[in-house]
Image (spheres, rainbow, N blue to C red):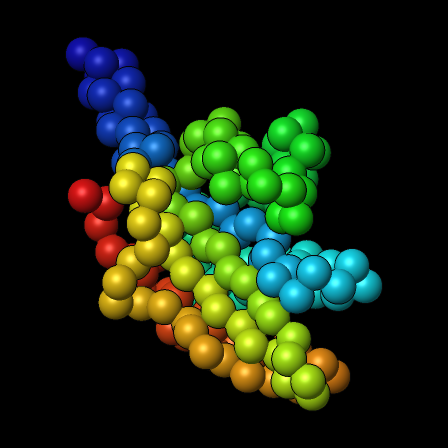
Length: 168
């Protein structure tokens, strides 16, 4: 009888730790799209995405609100699908990659350099509907080319609430 109680207690504790992790929203941050077309700026695509991913994880280090899909998994799948933001098939390919990653929400953005300023936008997409959250968006953020990464804290602050919203 005593063993039964201990096994039941152990199973309950294990379920208490594992079930929340299973039920959590899985989030992936994808490289930003270079709308400018200038190949030398492609490094910003990955720098912005990586900085934003780190900032979002640091906001919830225990990942109690959502689980961030590890960057190595993202890199593996993006290389498998040969995702290239300059390719016309990018939009359809990106959703196949997201499906393979089993993500529930996608953080994706874009940037466009015009003169001495860079316009940046970032969105949280619901995978089921493939639509950006209409309420929480980081739009029309301008920085100089030298201070592009300074926009990341503002982006994270604006997008974080969308990651907390329950899935439909």
